[in-house]
Amino acid sequence: MEKNKIFYIALFLFVVFIFKNASADIITFHPGFSVSEEYTDNYFQSENKTEEFNTRWQADFLLESLTKKSVASISYSPSYVDYRTYDENDSLEHQLDINGLYNFTRFTDVNFSQNFSKRISRQIRTGDIRKQTSAFLSAGIDNRHAKLSSRGAEVFLSIDDYQGNNVDDNKTFGSSAYLYHWFNVTYGYEAGLYSEVVDFEDSPDNRITYSGRIKLIKKLTKHFQVYTAYNQSFSHEGDSDHIVYNPFAGFDWSTGKTSNVSLGIGFLYNHYKNRENSMDMFVNADIFKMFDFSRRGTFSLSARSGYEQTDPQAESLGFNIYYRGGFIYTYRLMKRADFNITSSLKHKHYDESELNRTDKTFDISTGLDWSLLRWLSLGVDCTYTDFNTDAVLRTDYEETKVFLSLRLSPSRSSRMITEQIREDTEQKIFNKY
Image (cartoon, rainbow, N blue to C red):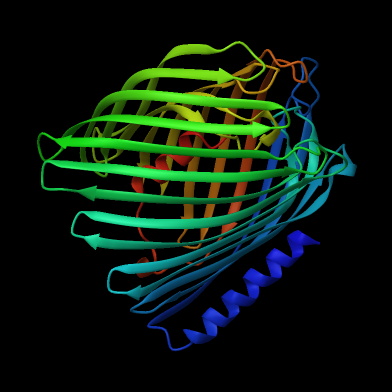
């Protein structure tokens, strides 16, 4: 019921926003339709392989509104998934995304975002396939109070509900604030605060988390700067407390949208109330580089490491440290056909839970994207996955998937598209993470 309330409230606010912008400079509507077939040789992701096919029929609707002071969009994608053998998993799935931004004053923006999905998904904690309903609602404000300085705040609510009783079912209330300021062209700092309360439906104990960070920066050149930083977080659940102390130092080097290196080295000290404390050397990295070998070929590298207070897809596992790296190579075979090879290696260590769990995943895939016509495209992909874990509730597995899709979609107006080279590339590399 609460998920439906969030959905209808956000939808009502968006309809009001659309009518308010009825005289928008640009209003565009983009329909689409796709049909896809997927084969897997290990449907249950276990040591004993079981083959399965599924067919997905999906419609897509996107409405965008643009004025001099605002931009808003709503997208809705209903789909029906039909399994060949396991008919009990046949499902009608929904994905709704609503986003808006309003330029309240010359230097102040307010924004809102709402996401709602209902689908069949695989849990990270157990590997079980379950029906999942998720909702996320956020609102924020950003203010540019100086030429190179800004500040902002956000509040959010998220809900995750799985079929049957599940320890990952939760409601999360959170807030965050940040400040980015430069004293002059050489010295600046970043600071932030974050808090959240996670209410687990199958547990009487809520998890409360507070964290803060500060980063002092010195710019040496236009593209190169050094920093020293400190992060600290505190979480409490039941009779368990966990404090993370993380001092580190490093550098940032950026030459534009196609190249960025941020690397820091320090210590990660974990203090527990009812467990033995630990301290490790820690690398905080965010690296991206795109190479244009020729007019036809592009090669991109990406690597990241860090720690998260919670994993959005496995709330009950709590705090985790992650490392991931990968590449994507794309080659244009002809004017409307691209060939690609993608590979990634992911490592996650859940240290907060008593399971003390580590997951390692290796993926490699190859695919072909072919635009037969401006409004018709064909995609073929083959992916191999090798997953290893020491979790009690999951087993190691190997899986090969083949994916074939046919999509019909009118071309979109270039005026409504903002290119985000890095974000799009990393999503392709880590789309199974």
